[in-house]
Image (cartoon, rainbow, N blue to C red; front, side, top):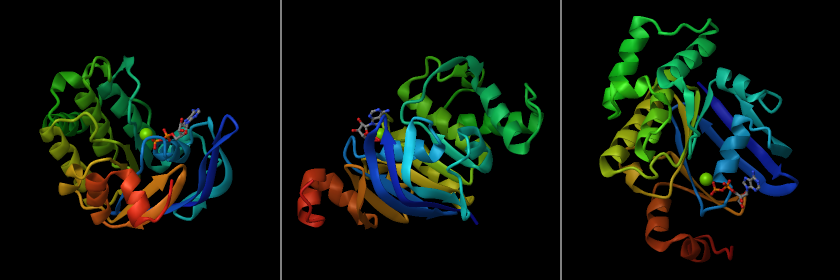
Length: 254
Ligand SMILES: Nc1ncnc2c1ncn2[C@@H]1O[C@H](COP(=O)(O)OP(=O)(O)O)[C@@H](O)[C@H]1O
Ligand SMILES: [Mg+2]
């Protein structure tokens, strides 16, 4: 059983306050959806949990299974099982996708990097690659090098499915995907949750939630959590838009 807690978290970037007293909890098997207009702080929250050095925690704590992770380096957080699938992943053309995944798995197991990986790892990676709608040749290409937007999202998902993290954060995993892609990513998130991963996912769309039912939906505005509800929140926001949702449902002028 895993539990990630964000407690009264306030964060500054270059001296500018971005997050204010954010509280949230996610446990094994739960899918917590985070919504909020552009610039409301969703990516900042994820990068702070991942330990990005630019994001300065000025108040509060982040705990994994009751223990603060604030002093841990980003690599140590990954090793503890917290993984982030980026909204816009940076290409790393020098490193093959299969090499990156092997390195991640070795890091997790505390072993030396072996490349090519053992046959059973290759078999699982190849199977998942095909299931995700990628081609085996993507594995031998540089990470995100010349990948389309949709291919990048699938490659991020491949890393999560192979690593089987304790906590997975997915930042807009459905953006730029076609309908088939959304179904694949949605089902993959549901599979991760079933296998016991605690999931935080940002989205602007209800579509992905046809495949994965959120345990809770958290709505952010201007760096604060302003509403917590269920699946109905996603549908309301989709039909009303954020502005009307804030005024009429949250009774807040943001
Ligand atoms: N590195 C940064 N430097 C300056 N401002 C930043 C930085 N990262 C985020 N911000 C600001 O923080 C706010 C929240 O951004 P972000 O977390 O990306 O929002 P979201 O993911 O909800 O769209 C925005 O106003 C953004 O401009
Ligand atoms: Mg964002």
